[in-house]
Length: 89
Image 1 (spheres, helix red, strand yellow):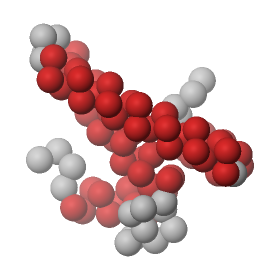
Image 2 (cartoon, helix red, strand yellow):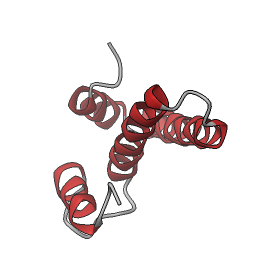
Image 3 (spheres, helix red, strand yellow):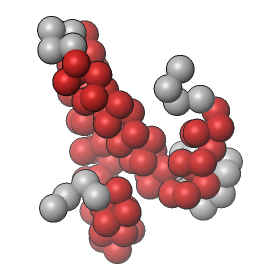
């Protein structure tokens, strides 16, 4: 699998407060972004994989809702996570 436990812990350590911080908005957004990037690469090779396309759209929506939540709660955390991940231009 492309995203094993060790890679997830690295993501949570980098973007969360600790290795076991799996529930914060920043760590979830980082995890969703990793999955979105992987699915995007998959869809570039397999254009007609509509199930993957549907799951990609769901993940993008989840990430968008978390980013909206973070905007309302703390704009500085929102700006920090966007700059780290390079989501916006």
